[in-house]
Length: 174
Image 1 (cartoon, rainbow, N blue to C red):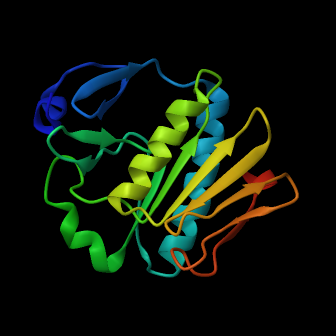
Image 2: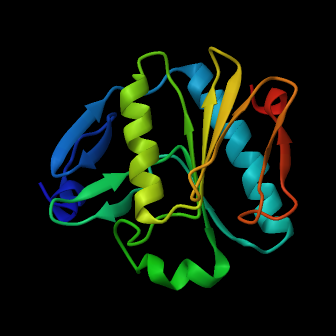
């Protein structure tokens, strides 16, 4: 399947992604996932708007990360810096990787699949990937330079050079 075929696919009430040409379908997420995702999105969007940094994108916004075979991933929250917005394209899936991708884990997420998503984001040019694990009450930060940090409840997500000045304690989103 191609990104264009996925865009035309009509599968209501399902979450889909395209991974190396293969359609992946998942059931809608539960309420904890939705609550945590909204809290992260509000924190990021508020900071982005206040400082005119670019645009924040909601869950299920597709980003084409690879072509032939196509990979289209949809993070729970994404950010694209102002100077890169024109490269998104007019319609359809974004044609570039976001600067920040946030994934909020659900109970059925498998560690190997999560790491595959992180790798896809970073290989496509995403500079910062945050993983929020509501069940374990932890966070993970993956950077383009290959470094990784584990966050516990007393620590915070920081925007680093992607979202300058952004600090959000993990407990604020859990």
